[in-house]
Amino acid sequence: MLKGIDPLISPPLMNVLMGMGHGDEIVFSDANFPAASHAQRLVHCNGHPLVGVLRSVLTLMPLDYAVDFSGILMMPPDSVKLTPEIWADFTALLATQKDGDKPFLKLGKPEFYERARRAYAVVTTGEQRRFSNIIVRMGVVTIA
Image (tube, rainbow, N blue to C red; front, side):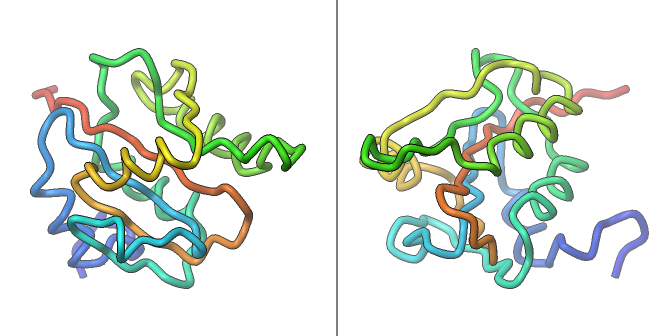
């Protein structure tokens, strides 16, 4: 254990975050996402809610200022007539972050999956709400 590090940040997750650089993308996925078949690097946070894990990561990771979106969401298919409830949670959480007040980029499932395959890592969580997947992009750490 380290002081000041949320216990949701496991050693494997910390290792992935430490390896990321500006512009690298990381996927936070729900329990149904095919993480193992889409990940270059896979971190298991099974049993933990996605928003809690993402909140913990954002205490360490800045969002990218150089893009016109806060995060990337996977859109439900047209046959599913709902806005995923977790999207409101994502909006509220990212709004608390520097450069988190931009709109979301929304991709269809095939485009989201392709983007996930190119991401630096996938963090799979125990989130069970449908369409609860988000990609965020690493920003620049500056000296304060």
